[in-house]
Every structure is written in structure tokens, then in C-alpha cells.
Amino acid sequence: MELDIFKVTFLAILQGFTEFLPISSSAHIILPKELLGWPDQGLVFDVAVHVGSLMAVVSYFRRDISALFVAWIHSCMGKTESAQAHLAWYLLIATIPAGVIGFLFASEVEAYSRSMLLIAFTSIFFAILMYFADRYEGARQPLEKMNLKTCLIIGFSQVLALIPGTSRSGITMTAGLFCGLDRRAAAKFSFLLAIPIIAAGGLFKGMEMLETGTSTDWAILFYAIAVSAAVSFVCIHYFLRLIERIGFMPFIVYRIVMGVALLGLYYSGVL
Image (cartoon, rainbow, N blue to C red):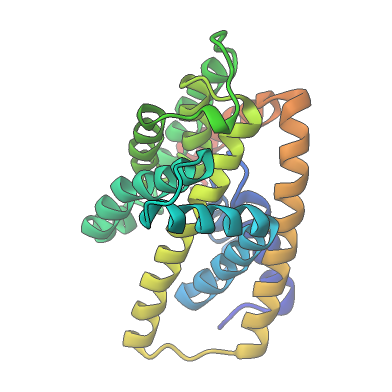
């Protein structure tokens, strides 16, 4: 790994901070390389920081995950059909579209993942979409009132996150808001939905790493995991508190400013 401790720390914080915010972590993680000329962090580092984010979301929602798992088992055994059992099934169903499409078109997605022009346009476009979703004036419902139609819409919307700059959390929250979920419900479902997706992506990249026989500096990797996990945990906690009071507007503005800045850098020849 060619990164020094400062760069490892910076990238791990960046990953942890942006993974669950609706601003696209994939876009941010490549900016230091494109803007500052840093070496590519490599597959091993990507796996490590995603493991950290996964640890954070599982830790934060550990009670919810435990309750959902128990309810799902009871549902499979025909014992009870609770709201938690339905939610567990919805999470599984919503994972399928992005999981299948991501597996089938992984190489095509990777080929366009470094396109700054595409990231700029998607940042702006999906920010505008989020604005209208956040201002949607239909009845707002908690997560317990979620139905299969909403689950399918969010699940298929997650496929769009394969487009660089879209933001997985951003597009799933946007879809949830359009479907009538309240802000906290849309965010919580998005975070829970991240668990199988991040786990599957980490497993896929991990297998690729083993196949290529990539060398590792374990001390640096464990440090990156710890930093990413800590930052992700704090980010989840405060994001859920903030959006109920201030909504998504700060993130919408940020995405538009970032997109415009990237367009300016691209057409000026910097990128």
C-alpha cells in the first residue's frame, strides 16, 4: 500500500463520513486521487473501509437487527406475522434487484466509476430529485406502515446507485420519501438496507483480492477499519437526529455545489 498514515486516516474518515450520507461515498473517495494526485488506495483498502462501515451500521442497529431476525424466523416457521417480520422480508426483497444487477454488470460499473463528468451530472440531477422528494406533501408514515409496493420501489431505485455519483443512501431515501415514508423511516430503512449490500460488495471484493494475491499491511488495514467504523457510527447517530429537524436541504445544496464545481474543473481541464 502506497498511502502514508495521513492519507489512510483522511480516506478512512472520508469513507466513514460519506458512506451513509446522501452525497455519494464512491464519488468522494476518488476525488483525492483526481484532484491531489494521490496514489489509488487499491482494492484492499476499499474492502477494509467498507468493513468498518458495515461494523458501524450493524453495531448501531444491533437491537433492531436482532428483533428483525427473530421475527423473520418466527415468520418462516409460521408462528407469527408481525410488522417486524414484514420489515425483515421487505429488506430481503429490496436487496435483490441491486444485488443481481450489480453482480451481472460489475465490470461495466467499474469502467465508468472514475468518470468525473458523469459524477458531476448525477450529483446535480439526484440532488434536484431529492429536493422534490423532501418537499413532497403527501401523508408521511413511520417504518411500521411500510408496504410491499414501497419496498419494491426502494429496491429497484437502489439499482440506480450503481451509476457513479448517485449515492446509494441518497437514492433509497429519496424513493422512500416519494413513497410517503417520513424522513427518519426513509433513512432507517436505507441504513438497514445497506447491511446486505455492503456485506455482499465486501465479500465480492475480498474474493477478488484473494484471487489476485494482493499483499497487505494488516496494521494499516485494522487502523483504517477502526477509523471508518468510528466515523460511520457517529455519522449515523447524528444524521438520524438532524434530518428530523432540518431535512435534506443541506445535503441537496452540497451535492449541487459539488457537481457544479466538478463541471468547472472538468471543462477547465483540471480533471
